[in-house]
Image (cartoon, one colour):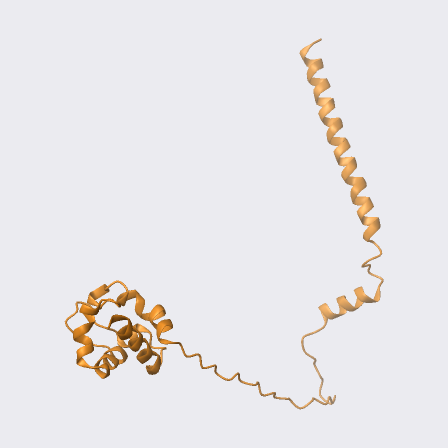
Length: 171
């Protein structure tokens, strides 16, 4: 058998397989078309209403002399949600705002639980600790204490509760 004959046979086989696949796709498309024709056709009222809604003009134009009564505008007052007062406890404030520095001693912050580091500060009085925590202070540490530990969203009472918690853990 010649090489041309082998090529022609293989070429014919590939063309035949592709023609069979194309025929199968055509039959499948026709079957799907028959199954879906009755669902949404141009003659149904649903289709016509959808088209009318899509091409409806945005506004109406009235010529001089034509009258159209416009409804009075209605303003509805939106009910404002009441603010929810979510007060955190001392341990919660410590874990969210204070732990970053007072858990590891960053910038010279006294570590919670180390009584030796807290004894001098506790001796100054609880009011001095409250004032420093709420308003911040520079002190002798390399990094100053930010007001409310940098969390200005905390209330003064929440900061006091966190100070009480840290003092109780470090005494």
